[in-house]
Amino acid sequence: MNGNQPLNLSMLCDFYELTMGNGYWKRGFQDRITYFDVFFRDVPDKGGFAIAAGLEQVVDYIQNLHFAPEDIAYLRGRGIFCEEFLDYLANFHFTGDIYAVPEGTPIFPREPILTVRAPAIQAQLIETYLLLAINHQSLIATKASRVVRAAQGRTVLEFGSRRAQGADGAVLGARAAYIGGCAGTACTISDQLYGVSAGGTMAHSWVQMFDTQLEAFKTYCEIYPDNPVLLVDTYNTLKKGIPDAIRAFNEVLRPRGLTKCGIRLDSGDMTYLTKMARKMLDEAGWQSCKISVSNSLDEYIIQDLLLQGAQIDMFGVGERLITAKSEPVFGGVYKLAAVENDAGEIIPKIKISENVGKITNPHFKKLYRFYGNDTGKAIADYLCVHDETVDDSQDITIFDPETTWKRKRVYNYTARELQVPVFLGGKLVYQLPTLQEIQDYCKKEVDALWDEVKRFDNPHTYYVDLSQKLWDIKYQLLRENSQE
Image (cartoon, rainbow, N blue to C red):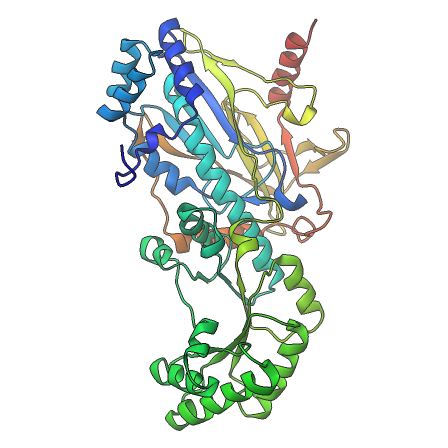
């Protein structure tokens, strides 16, 4: 294979997925039905919640799973796989079930974002890509949600392509940022592929290309008169940049009756400069001119700028968003939760660790979210065994996940099951929403969280509790598997 051939993502797996698959085949486990959960343990940046993203790429991956002749030849050349297993891979296709929370859903630690029910080899082989897709986009969508909330209703654009970690990091990062609430991106291909509105103005090089800054600004206004945004800090922002922008607006836009325009700042003391810029623009009669800023912004800098009275209408956020620089790993994991025996009975499985946070929740589960009928706000999430149902008319007592003894009674609520079927028997049964629908859904669901949960620092811990039946199963497994 050379670098010009398209990648077969079926081979984007950890090598031990293949060695385990070969071992399952030799042991006769290839048809054993297994249940795996994708979940995470800690919210990035010590936030109150994360945002699920990446499901559309998982769907595309599952639909295109196959091993090409050159893949089989490569594996045969390793000399460790039996021919029967290689024949199985040569005819491979996914036949299992996948359940997932929709993209844009606020999610919390240790609850299943995605559940796979499939024969052992199939379930094992898809682990790496599922984690890659969900970890990356959930990380960026979560960071974008924080940045957008810090902006308090002002427009946020994703500007990070050139600092992203690879092409997919830029393209899919822009998609995830849009899910989290960004209004658009500087990444053209993300618009072409996913409809993430792409836009941009000029670089400092545009200004430097002309003999004078005024000529650069007037030329730009003449070419793009409908909404020109001029970069005003190439030279001296207050003495030359803003005055030249005002003159260009006066000489090119005003005679045509056009008033929609903007300036952008990419350096300097943003609070001071935007206050002065607003004053200068207003005094010149350009109250309609919008002020945008960029330059290594994140949610904390944006929050501070607005607290200091900065006059900003739009934020362009780059490297600290597209790389989630403050905490660049989401930490989602893929763990076995149950297997089926020959009689079709589901046998729960658990992973035990001396690190309590790494102990898994066993069994094939359902995930509910309770919404208060009086407030519309999310009250708690509730994990139960797959054959349990929640009756909205009954009160439920849940436990604080941090203290394990503090109880909360939930009443007058509506319960919604969060996971939806995506694949059943290997067939896609889920209608993928548009990206705009995902963003709208995300905003609605984030708005349903209490402000205390949305704090950046020391957020209120959201309740995620187990049903009594699930807790009893977990406790029994803990007792059975922790005996010396």
